[in-house]
Length: 287
Image (tube, rainbow, N blue to C red; front, side, top):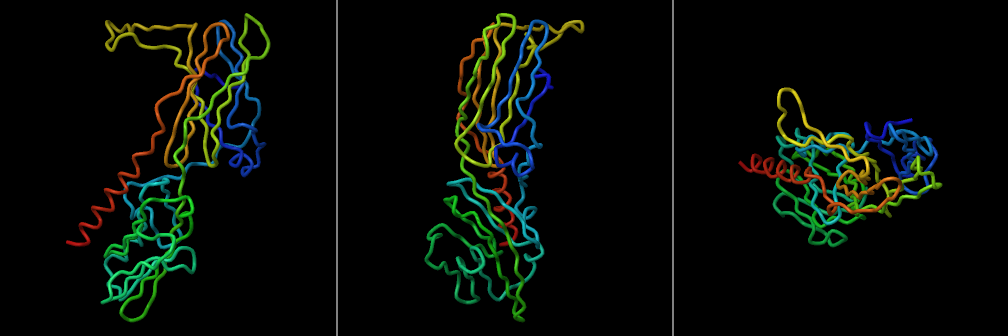
């Protein structure tokens, strides 16, 4: 059981719950809330495994790229940078090339011949920098794959590094719905639903704040508070590793519910930090 007014609860999508061995919900995240005078308590319709952790992003690209296989995320229509490990920056390579998957060459840098971009699905979307960092623009979902960079020194020794790229869609505004059960004036028994038509999404229900400060300053240790028991807002936030969006359900006493959308979907600021990190890395490489 949970105290809705004190906790924020996260649920995973069908794929996340199934992968962790838990039962799969039919529509996103659902919970049933039983309200009564004097307190708010909730019981979950189902119990499942904890949601899988979201991919963590790093502000500096070199922190994401290791000698072993590493992972980078991007958003559809955005830009991503794939970089070899930091130790390769101090080595002079005779030639290098990037592959999409294990066989398709997409960028080739041969000493004395410059950079070549073979025709293919990445036409006019690639840029290979002198430090062998590969920039991919106008990202598509199909760009998700394992990329390999092959670095060959003047002695003919070749080093290979793998980077897995996962491209996500921007999460749209979720659909929220409230289904009231029964007609008891003493209690509000309702099921709240939240979902979006896409995969790899984590849902989070945020219950209303029970107390709201009226003023910004307290006087003599006293903080004025305001509480409206007849109006409460429950917010559902749907998110993936690159973006999030939310929608709200407003409850009016005793058990009337209205859906209200929130701001437009927002992408994380990490992409901008990654861009800044790559530009700084390129600047120091060229100088």
